Amino acid sequence: MSGSKSVLGSELIARALKLEGVETVFTLAGDHILPALDVMADGGFRFIDTRHEQAAAHMADAWGRITGQPGVAMYTTPGFANAIPGLTNAMHSESPLLSISGSAELLELGRGAMQEIDQVGMAIPTTKAAWMVTDARRIPDMIATALRTAYEGRRGPVHLTIPVDIQQQAVDEDEVAFYAPGEYRDLGAPEASMQRVRDAVEILRNAERPLIIVGSAGSYSRSGETLERLVETTRIPIMTEGDARGLISDEHPYCCGFFDSGLNRAARLLREADAVVLMGRKQDLIVGYAMEPNVSADAKVIQIDPSAAEIARNRGVAVGIVGDVDAVARQVTEEASKYTWKDSDWLARLNEQRAVQREMLDSLAGNDTPMHAVYVHKTVRNHIRKKDFVVYDGGDFCHFGRAYNPALSPYTWWYLPPLGMLGQSIPTAIAAKAAYPERRVFMFTGDGAFGFNAMEYDTAVRHNLPIVGIMGNDSAWGIDRQIQVGVYGKPVATDLLPSRYDQVVRGLGGYAELVEHPDELPPALERAIKMERPALLNVRVQNAISPRAEAAINRWKSHTPLPM
Image (cartoon, rainbow, N blue to C red):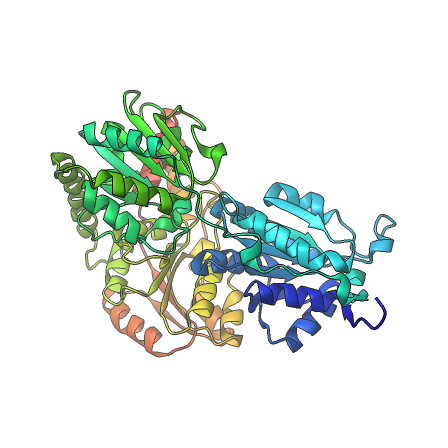
């Protein structure tokens, strides 16, 4: 149109992301995104630049789940290849992550262009959807399409490849349309039909041993108030898992803690439940596929999920409801309030098992050298406040912590999704501190997991993000070594050195100490907290088998799909 203002593709990227409320981007600079980075820097975006693109993806993944807002990661072509593991993990964590990569000029693709790979083809198996932008005028609506896809149903990562010449393409501004998020997503929480709600309540009223399990897709409401009203009305025991940890406090009288049969003895009683409510919890390995012997054939299953594909995935259900978990829980509560509910002996049995578990763990926290993992976690727990973030990696050291430490508030208790990809704790902790700089972040890692993203301590130092890291160093790939010894009788390729990882962190500008004796830990922890610098305590611990490793050994030996 004559007289229309010209605008670059890079400017359209910046404006579209601003419209989504995006202000923080996780990145590693490279040729094919330099035009976009330049314009976005002038537009006031905060860039947290990492030392590896996988870490950038992990940070964007964590940001999306911690804040509920889109996590954005940007990188060049080989950087995109590095980010694939992070995107794979985000698919399992179901994070609203927007991955943006540049590429060689559109005209040159297919001719052996610079660093050319099939980015969209590579992204498709690791995201909900992926596209290439071929005209700058399409940038706003394709960002909108990508994020609508990321948030609809069960959440997940999406990818856009925007070639470098499309970033530099000048188009008439009048030819570009922008869409506010409220115009194409978050248009209302779908509810259930009242007949299905009544059917669900009738099953629960007649059940003697009902159990509610809330998974990650039950956490989209950002609040656990509806769940609290539900269990306080029905007096039905509840457990949380995934991103739902802390949505209702583990200290709530009707909450029986972490749904993990390896780390919470109460969760093993699932097989005795006569009614099971899966709220945003898939029928996957975590619940033994909801099949016998993990869930009784006589038990009635009620499943509430935002994705129709997850309803009755492995087992038929008595009531299946596709809808927003929080909205449906509100409907169930309203219907349940018409009746009188009583406490049951079932709740007492679940709590008895939790007490047995706690007593067993406490018995391990002796004043030994080297320290037991439980002693370390018990010491740190004395410093953890309700709103502090606690972030766990995988491995035996962290499994002890996940079994021992409660989740007390929403979106503060983080661990690996079912993919089990090690090394996420450092990027996740950095993202949490970037999102909420006024709150403290405690990060737990093993010596094996630390190696994947150790250089991100440099990122934390450069961006002044003081996390407190506690490493359990047993000089081994702990859980796999335990499984090898338990199943095959010997370890293979699972021994590590007693390395001075604390010196690595000091070399990167952080604060670090080696802690070898129990009496050294409390003062070292206090110093690490007070330093207000990225910190790591390299703590020598016993090579002790965790309850999760014991469960894994039993699973290997039994050759049955026991729940994790």
